[in-house]
Amino acid sequence: PDLLAAVTKGAEPYPIPPGKKYQYGTAGFRMKAAGISNAGLDHVIYTVGLIAAARSKKRNATIGVMITASHNPADDNGVKLVDPMGDMLEQSWEGLATTLANTPNDKLAKAYEELVNDTLVDEIRQLHERPAKVVFARDTRASGPYLITALKAALDAVKVEYTDYGLLTTPQLHYIVRCVNTLNSPYAFGEPTEKGYYEKMATAFKTVMHGRAIQGPLTVDCANGVGAPKLKELIKYLPSGKEGGIDIKVVNDDVVRPEALNLDCGADYVKTKQRSPPSSAAQPGDRCCSLDGDADRVVYYYTDESKTFHLLDGDRIATLGAVFLADMTRVAGIDQKLKIGIVQTAYANGAATEYVEKVLKLPVTITPTGVKHLHHAAARYDIGVYFEANGHGTVLFSDNAIKVIKEAVPKSPGQKHALESLRACIDLINQAVGDAISDLLFAEVVLAHKSWTPENWRNTYIDLPNRLVAVAVHDRSIFKATDAERRLESPKGAQEDIDRCCQMYVKGRAFARASGTEDVVRVYAEAHSKTEAEKLASQVAEVIK
Ligand code: NG1
Ligand code: ZN
Image (cartoon, rainbow, N blue to C red; front, side):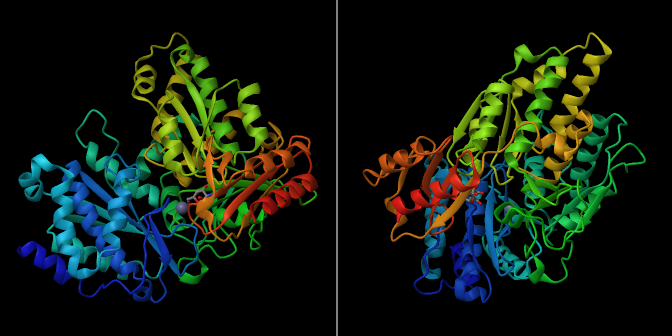
């Protein structure tokens, strides 16, 4: 009863504004935070504190809470929950989080009690007694510190032990959660500190590099977000170009002016506008990449001698990584024991899919949009490489793969080198979640091994011209997709119309699906020329309107 009174009391400063409806979406809760109490994000965060406590009791493990709105404008903010192994909150709990967020303060204590009671019926007594632990962090947004106050109020009310990690990238928090929960186990992930993260990555990087230097500097656009100070910190642990390592130039690192975040820079800008940030001083041929506001997405790009911009997106990073890992397992003589595959969504360029299947001869799985779908599909391979075209992804190694790689006995110096590289890749790649900083180091390592320029990388296959448009519709809920979102099953007849449009073009492929994060239907189209891809996209948009 004391506890429940505390929940009600603690919630007082954070009432739910009238008429608000919240939904735990693909990326947690996200909304405008300017005039926070108008949007009620503080109320949402308070309820997320309660959910984190209940989830921690249920799983008997530490749960993570990250306050960020990723690539969204500086005025927005949001929150996502991290499950014990550093993965995203289990889907069945998203509904519970939504219900609690929509509960007014006077009913919150009761709702929390029911939540804890219902989640594990036969352990009711222990569950309320069970200690809970939560760790949290935030990105650089101005609204972050206030929202942390709301989160702490909830955790204090339900007497949960917590650690405030201050500013972190989203993947760093996922890393910490996994480390805390695997400490002293055979699956220990690392030291649960920021320093532990840098040391693990730097050690792995040095091992895979074998003293080989990376040619030319890499320019990293940090979207004026939390990735900037964190990448600068990591650089202190990495060998420089002269020492057989890498030279990284950090740009768009202004975290002092909050409004600069994601403004005319960052991964989302580069991917959607298909151009370099206007502030870029890169010269033709320079290797560049852009992170998003919480550093869980990365895309590469360069301009050629004629100043034409070339994007090397998530599909490219996936194929680059898969080529390297497949080569290394072959050299190490363990390729017969490991099933390597790539996971994409329908937004992957058709040329990328064809390259993987026909040239690399690796299997491809297509899943619905959203990294949780890709992550689960990748876990079915021994080495599963997954990326969304927009740059969110990573590589997963199965327990079997880790065992095979760790236990293999080399029969030659070549095999020894390959096995050491594979072992280091297991550490270099943040398997908890897609991590821009870890992904870019991995991409750099592969480019160095192959002595590839960005142009060599681009020449592995040429993207089909494509067009992505957002179509405003009256009610997007009538658009029901099937077959990994590549076909519409409703409204009736729409898919037949789309098929007819596609048949009119060489290499024509198009699909329409309702967005999970915005009130629009997205139409993607590709064809063998730019004009045709654009025509196809507008024809399909007409079908949808
Ligand atoms: P929606 O709005 O459902 O298309 C977008 C991105 C996803 C993913 C999520 C989560 C595209 C086409 N879609 O999803 O890839 O990143 O946001 O942030 O880029
Ligand atoms: Zn992000």
